[in-house]
Length: 68
Image (cartoon, rainbow, N blue to C red; front, side, top):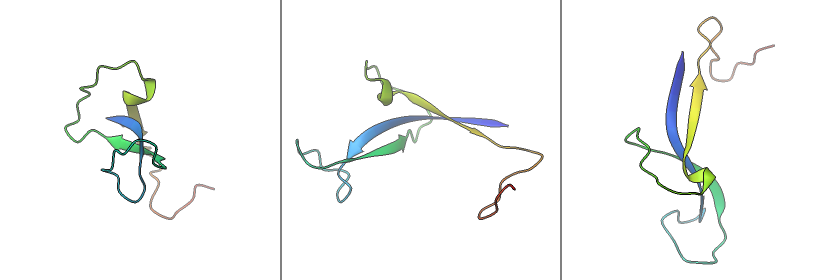
């Protein structure tokens, strides 16, 4: 089963993500769209992306377990 979520990758201030001051140090963050729609019209490739989550129905990965 596949689940697709619209996301954007944006640089944000790690101490205050809502801060938009030019020139501050930032880290890249994945930001999912809460409404499950993509409403961005931009030429920046990382502003409009799709995260595809694939669930293995035969061997689902459970928290903390590894597939050896």
